[in-house]
Image 1 (cartoon, rainbow, N blue to C red):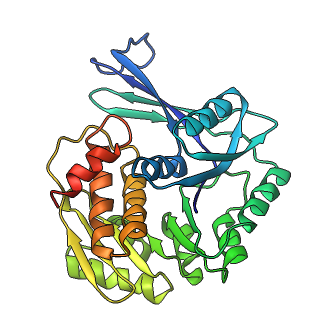
Image 2 (cartoon, rainbow, N blue to C red):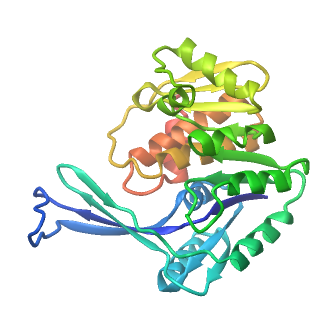
Length: 301
């Protein structure tokens, strides 16, 4: 089974404006949408859209948390969230006009008891399971919670996928994650360099492998993506043609597509292309990508 963890899920309230935002005044929207997610839930959704069963773990609170859990269940994903006694799950406001403005909420406080309950759920994972950790950590959890989880499960034959940045990522490499996904800028920042060529990107991706990562997937926006595999191969893919509508969830979709492609084929080229197709399909959509669109884009790569 594949498991995702969303520590701080959210309802994204999208407000579209046909005029520039005028601070201090009453502004009227042209249209609105609500999307239920968080990085782990986004991964779970795209996995399900590609026919991969999975379980979404995490925390939820209040009426917004209930709505998030209900939305996950409606997608056919197994929702195994811990309901918190206080607070509400986040509502993030994203204003889209000539410029994009985001207000990301704090989220509820996670109690020690709820945190321990999550750890006990994770203890039940078995050899061959996949655990996907993605996103930031709420300030009510230990800042090294990724390390705590991976150390706790290390040696059980579980495949770890970690989509995080800088120190959060560097500190878990010793647990040999199956896949990590920095972008080229994040990769350079980890080593205090600016990476300009494919060879430079490969060089520093291999440094992450020397530190323990098995496979390193580097996303490069309009320049496509690169994969450095644990068996020494380098694969490169460009960006499919299409009109970009949405950046939210594209990276999560790439992770989901890669995992789905690998689970179905155990072929790294297939996994890279499926990840690229999934990330692009979400970028070309108003919401997360459908399986049909992902597969149609995949055929063009």
